[in-house]
Image (cartoon, rainbow, N blue to C red):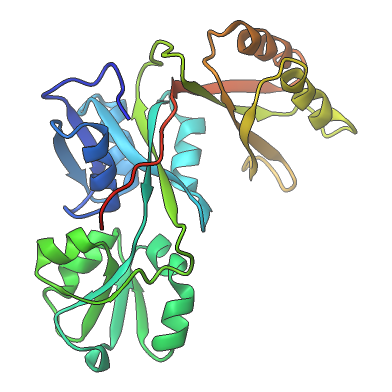
Length: 283
């Protein structure tokens, strides 16, 4: 996908080291951009807030494991916006310098390990499992220590001189991660947009959610996602994250959001941005 505000020479912040799926998403977003790698997602988000980078690329949702809590919480807590999205197919490999029978430790990001549960249970039931900050970090460590294996991408194998012992090992073949592009300003409409909001209902009452959703349904606004997450303000208290087709400046969406403000505790617009398309990436 292309975001109109992206220009040659811009800097994108992302999770490192080199070889992550975040890097793949960033290169899809803008092949000519400079990349600034960070050790964790919080640092990527912080670099956007401080304007150390022009934008950040962070995972927000995986088709197997669901939403990424760190990203979702940051969108609520900080004055930061989704300004674009990139959807990347995830194809995990088992990487090592040794042989299958020599592996004593398997490392990866928590998402990578979770997405390959069946493979690990079937083939490595007695092997130690270790979580790392990213899939590429696991690959880098694996290149330094014998007896270790990493669950990571083909790019990581090439980057760190590892052999691919098994390919396409995720539990389900249709495995995609949606990456959010984070920035400090909402872009202008393109005609092919999505809007994302967070809502907190004032009181838990019969029909509250029905009334809320009715504002969209009555205007034929297509909701592409609705998810509840704990508000962290008390047991049983939830926030609703909603994605919809269209830009916040569109008349129907603007009217719906104005009406919603009257029936909820609060609503926060966390993005109105060009809709991403699924990219076919060779692995």
